[in-house]
Image (spheres, rainbow, N blue to C red):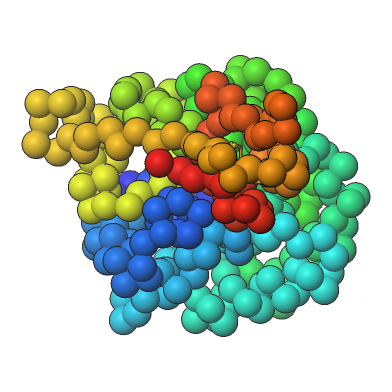
Length: 316
Ligand code: SF4
Ligand code: SF4
């Protein structure tokens, strides 16, 4: 598995980053033991980079997967923390729950927030910088869906790594087009930032042509690493083959059928609007007192699910 340096950081990571979101409670809700088995399989195939977040609920899956592994793994996590104290708690939680001495990357988990996030969350950012100075974090990052945030992050000395949303359809990108995001990525790369791609398959919407989707992202200037959510060993194999340039079509024994997903709002919706606030992509609206999802905008991230007090949101 090809490994590449992540910008000006000291990190050397596999081109395939294991995305841990889908196996957690926001989506598939696999047990830690089942999730760990898939992650461990990916490690055995040469993957050394895992992406998670405080809200994904997958620290235990990762901790179990790396038990007795003995080789270096870069773990990236993210937190919505705003203040210094909140970020400190988030970092300490990650260090303990993952059972590591050092975290590879800790991102400001920003999604749809614009560049104002660097002022609004200056305390959290200061904390990240302090922890990096203390040697407990190797790189400080920002995870974002927003073009302007990538542009702003490229200019900030504190930010080492940017995790932007990018895919061939441009689905989920905020505040600009696919090509504008690609240009912002190239600019960030030229300034020494490390980059890896989020939502390469648009949360599952581009699974019908994975080769094109992956090829587009890894063909972008400055983008050599793709984070892909996986819940099955066969998906690991298929993505590794795609990375090697193989065409894994439906006739191939390595083809993994598309498990199509859809977001459903049940009749128990009371129209409180909490899910609208949680959606990073403006895919939800209220109509006649009930939440409605726009399938074109929904990137199936699952962030809306846990905020519903009525348990009315399901990914099926
Ligand atoms: S959070 Fe739940 S109850 Fe509130 S609007 Fe959304 S789906 Fe309906
Ligand atoms: S509707 Fe829910 S699953 Fe879809 S993009 Fe918004 S938060 Fe994510």
